[in-house]
Image 1 (tube, rainbow, N blue to C red):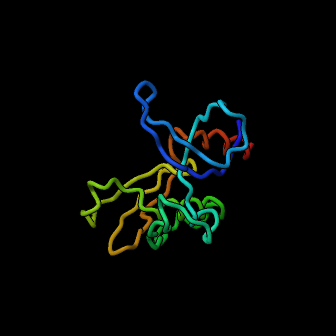
Image 2: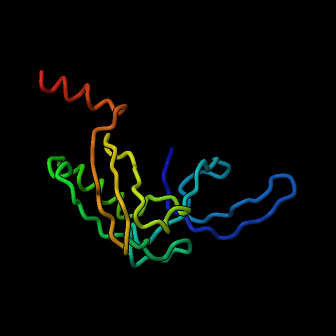
Length: 142
């Protein structure tokens, strides 16, 4: 499998095949199947580039860790949790409930949080029961 950044020239609707993409800049031979196509996001790759799908980065929430069980986590785990929560993982249907406590599994932990006024507050972080971390921690202590 290869990875190429290409330009979508046009999409043509064909009777038997359905939609056919015409792409420019692929570094492969004609007829080679393309398995997956994703939009190019300039904000994530190169801000000076031009893209047509999502020109701007998504808005992020401020994340506040207001619980003592967050501080002992490794720095990388803290970063991953903060980054994921800043993108607001709540389901769209429940976003109008400011006091609701949500939960998400991240880095082998169950993270509980609330969101109000653009701020995500971490309520608790505990090891997820089915994460496999219990066994890893037991072996490390042995």
